[in-house]
Length: 123
Image 1 (cartoon, rainbow, N blue to C red):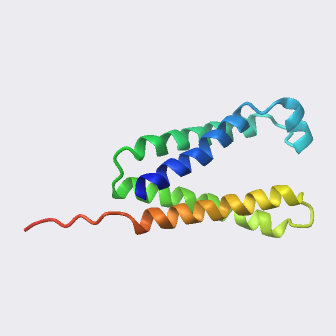
Image 2: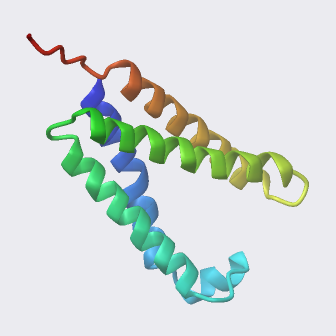
């Protein structure tokens, strides 16, 4: 279950990072993003975070689980208020997508924290 949390998080962030990084200028103008470098930087960061999750899923430990849980919780904390506060101006499909993404990230963070194997040292 712990490795699944890493892989599922990577499956969320890698495609999103690629879409944002290679966002066509016409779609960026439709979405209202005027400086095109903003989604490209965000896409690069998300792509790097997803790649790190793939690498960390090979041999998870406490530090990597902390990074996974912290990153997922911070991302959900950034998306959830935006989706809830701007319900009247945000398209319903985008709002639903943000709520589902926030919920998935929260569940993956909790699953990773609950399945972290404890290591007990010998005296």
